[in-house]
Image 1 (cartoon, rainbow, N blue to C red):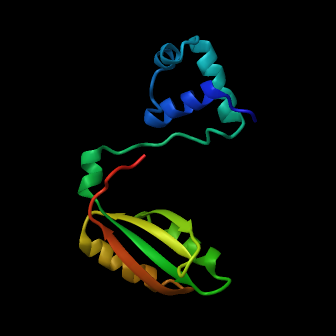
Image 2 (cartoon, rainbow, N blue to C red):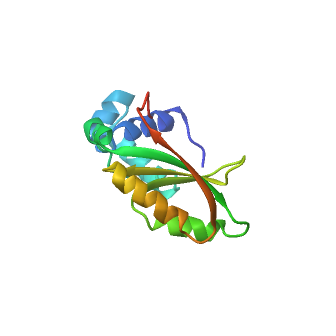
Length: 143
């Protein structure tokens, strides 16, 4: 599906605030409200917009302890490991990567004790050969 410059601007506005009223978006982009609604519906139907989500406040996010966990997986067990990691609500994202590790998991927990316990639980999953973790000290910027 072709996406034009107005679609890209619309998507950027929705990424910043998915609850922004269509009338406000229309004013910002210089088009009618019905045009914005039609574009949003077209982007949803085509799968460009896959859904909407909740974004937590910066204050709440700063109260969470986050970690990156690099994971080495036994050959042919990557999908089983991914399914096991998906079961932990504190694993907020999982990336397949190149290099000495196969996956990087991002954790978000309320306490260091929970991160410690979660790392033990992750390490015990069948198919995980090795993990290395890093606690995130601060976020310089996030988009």
